[in-house]
Length: 213
Image (cartoon, rainbow, N blue to C red; front, side, top):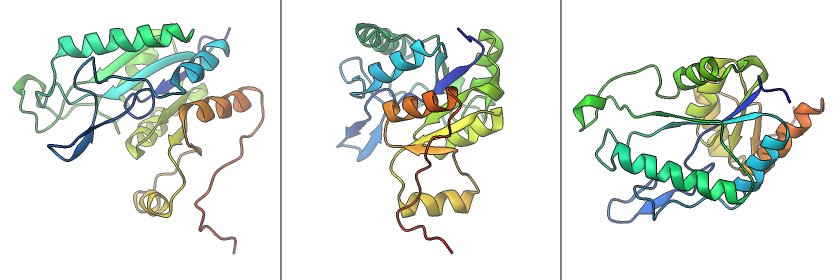
């Protein structure tokens, strides 16, 4: 088992479902244990990564604490539910690292510009130091360009969760950010990582309107 390689996972929208808050008109993290639910393929995907001998580490911005949406205690309870539901699928996490800060926080102890809030790579760097991970041999998987930027800054291969859409491609071009791969969900990302681990090159997905000149 090669324990120096890891897969870093964003949490919301990758491991668990996002929540639509109709009264506020926003899509956000679950604020309660009852709202937390794994993405359908998350357990199978993480179990596959476990069987590859890769560490699986959640690295996630959780500014809900800074915005008084939920407490640190509630976040711990949500973590317990996440680990319990994953264990039912034979899946486990080797670490969970959160950034609780926000530069415009209502909860003043967490109001700061920090080095751990993605797109900065602080969470990955701290996890790598704590767990003995070789970042250049590891992967970052997330559903936002900030995840890709954090992974690239740490020296990891990156996979963006989503569908290749022209708007996303234009956004990536405008920000000068391109992941190594795009996959529709965590299970497909895990299967792509398996291909990499076996020495193959996974097929890249491109914007449907991309043309060859």
